[in-house]
Image (cartoon, rainbow, N blue to C red):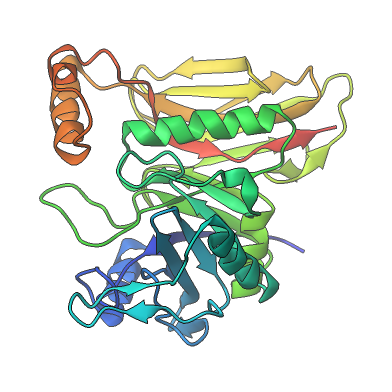
Length: 342
């Protein structure tokens, strides 16, 4: 069966929690952005009775369980437990007394058939205050909203888990609440999913299996990684002349494309100018996995502006970073999930 690529945003909020758009307005905006599917994940609120199609847009049921201990997205099924509502603030909260209660709530979601995503696990403002190894999850959101330093901590942790042999799928979500000034937040980033069909079941299955590529926006360019007929999420056998092929679309000037075999870079290309399409091959020499990513660096002036923005958003950042701007890593513009090499 021929598979199709679908573009989506799995982390969105409406006026049912703390977003500024009603569901109708949000769906229209996502249609305009060129998305194929979305997941409405209001805080502690089941905004949808079930997944449905709005024209060509697949709208998948979801909820972000939001607690002091951590944030988790629940997709495809209603959270079995009902929250308590604060009549003064209008906020919904679950009656979770301790870590055991948190784990029990997530276990009930999994038992109901939901897909569980670990959200922004190293966020400065809302970190996990529970050992994330205490509960099961199907994927991890390593890219949350417009690019920032915490995402790179998540990326590094995820790669570390891959190097341990853990087959953990990664996604990206805009965590959209509203637009801010001139920065586009909706569908930044975008999760591209390789599916058998356009349905809730197919999308969630593909996400769990790591059949996805995450890009900065719906039209910022795409990465296609293959080994023979195998694509992201597949497994191949290591043999002599095992070749990874990579194709990058809309590669920007000064952006760097790398292909990794485990922790080793087996191909690298820094674009001198905009390249509408770039293709390359690299030999795979080790068992484990192969993956690809595109990274970039800010100019010195933009680094200072970025550091100021991080300082204002993450109050714990030190003010001297605005002056030095030496702490910034290379940021991701796009990345693939792995192809596994056995």
